[in-house]
Image (cartoon, rainbow, N blue to C red):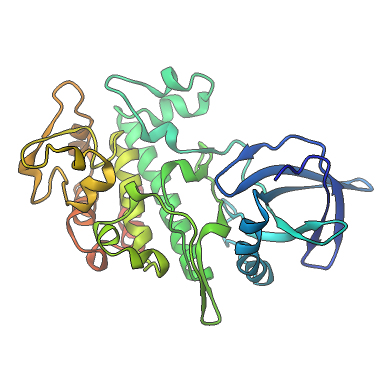
Length: 337
């Protein structure tokens, strides 16, 4: 749906109605909708909101009940360095009152996703790939003790944010990955895409609408029904994959050579590797070989023993038995204090 020229109204929790005509370009686009920055001026005060407007009436209708329930039951973090970008306003057509989407708080200034830390090449640096992200350069370089400590610290901030959201809002995030989290270089964390999460309120569960197969546990690939009733450890596995990527520069199931009988085309996708339990340090590790001139997995050996143990357990145990987000919090906290 093209929203340019549309007149909208934003209903806030205190029943205030803000009216606006969309003339600006979206600041981002995603699979579900488009994102706009909306500034409302009232006397000397300027309020800034981020609007998520769904691509189609079908997507809007599918998410309407969940978003309205979230809007009526607001959740905020107790930590000033954490933002849950929760629905704080409902967006309608100003004339027909058709539901378009929702308004939310803006992420912290200077936020960016963590692909800056999770995708590497041998002998690569952040400065080479992201020359203008100066505040991330030396502080987070992969091959330095300072970089490792700061990556562990950032992972701790992320893990405790997930744990707090789990506790306060009865959600399973469902699509945890480095490209879906917004952080600042000094460790402030913003959780976005709230409407795509699995959300339970008063005994009713609204299903999650987003997940990435390369971040889903083996059990999920074998039992698709888990996507419609995700356990909390769904997020724990996705976080473990993300942690491995941020600490080593590569996905735990990628950058290896498959040996027979797993050298067939059907095992080339990351999701197929996960489903077949083809983890380098797992039971089937004997069927895998690292790439000699591109062995980012060697960075695993530099990690604290407790973190290596959590990662190995995450990729070799059943979904019910892998380390929880709370265990990740406790272990990462000990590493950074």
